[in-house]
Image (tube, rainbow, N blue to C red; front, side, top):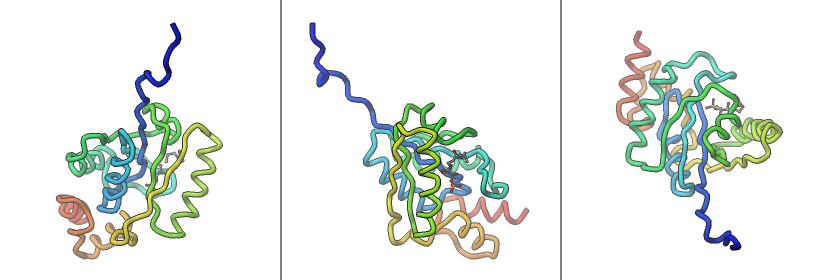
Length: 172
Ligand code: PNS
């Protein structure tokens, strides 16, 4: 009996949206939401401890909890913490794609370098870049933390509850 390749179950397209998410912002949510419309499944990969950044304000577990609440309405998105090379995490999730957001030329330079490095390590993984929506093109976790440190209102920049959690953490 010859097998009909068209009859085979189509492979689910899984993408990883990696990041520090310290904390998740509405800009991250915009990218995750748009990726979830394109891929069958999106795994949000929370870096346990990034290599290029100072100590995170929130633990990886806290960051995961914030994200879990923020994406609760998206049934094809799940959150995982990882402490390995990104490409190893992508393979472990059975994913074939990395999705990242791009806000500005400065993001492009960093992402271009990461892209080349990741591609050297695993050329079976393709990276996709979603342009930030204009209303979030200025938004970063670093900026949000700086505003919060000096008492700025960040309520409309982050999902519910995070502004309060950040203010409380900074006050300690
Ligand atoms: O800007 P972020 O949120 O700190 O980005 C984190 C991440 C993992 C997306 C970025 O550091 C990256 O693309 N790293 C690829 C290289 C790698 O595997 N590093 C080990 C995990 S930090």
